[in-house]
Image (cartoon, rainbow, N blue to C red; front, side, top):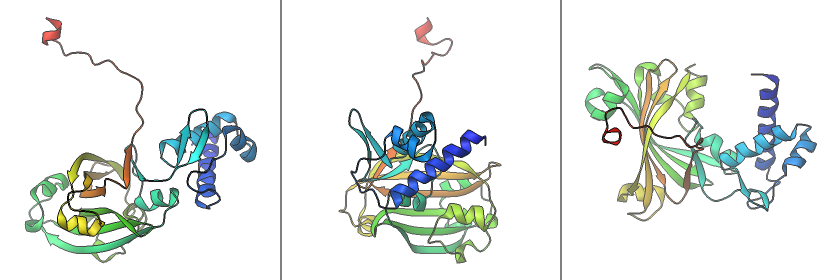
Length: 254
C-alpha cells in the first residue's frame, strides 16, 4: 500500500472512531469535506474519498443540498466485501452479541446434499455444524446456519463461536480468506425462525445462501442465513453503463 493509501485508511478509521464514540447521534449532521480536510490535515480529495466510502457502507447518509448525516435505521450488508457482523454493528454504533444455539461435529450422512457438493466433501469427511443468533443492541437480526469442513479447522466445535468467525479463522487457524459466492432471495419467515427473530410468522426475510473460499479456492464454509427484512438493507455500488452485445448468430443479427 502506497503512502496515499495509508493516509486514506487511517482517516477512514479515525472517522469511524469519531462516530463510534457517540459524539454524534443518529440523524446528526456530520463533518463536511472541508472540515475533515482541515481537522485531519489531509487533501480535499482524500476527505471526499473517506466520506464517500462511509456513505457507501451505510454509516453516513448524504442528502443533496443539505449535507452528510449519521445514518440510523437498518444494518448494512455489503455485497462487495467480506465484513464481519461484529465489525459492521460496531461501525453503525450498535452493540453486537451472539447466542450459539447449536454446535456439533456431524458425519457426512447428516449433511444436506447441496452442502456436500458445495464443500466438495468425501465419504469419510465430517463437518462442524453451527447455528448462531446474531443480535444488535439485544435485538435478534440474523439466524445463521453454517457447515465448515472439520479437517480445515480442528476443534472448531469446541472453540469460542460467539465472536467473529472471520477473526477466528484468520487468527487461530491462520487461514487466508479469498471471498464467497452467494445468492439472495426474499422469503417468508417460518414459525420456528420467527420465534427466534422475534417477528411474526410470515414476516419478510432475506435468505442468503453462501459458500466461502480460501485464497486457493478451497471451500471453507457453506451457510443458509436468514436476515430480518425490517432490520437489514443490502447495498452495492455499480459501475458505469455497459452495453450488452448480442452473441453471434442470434436473431438480432439476422
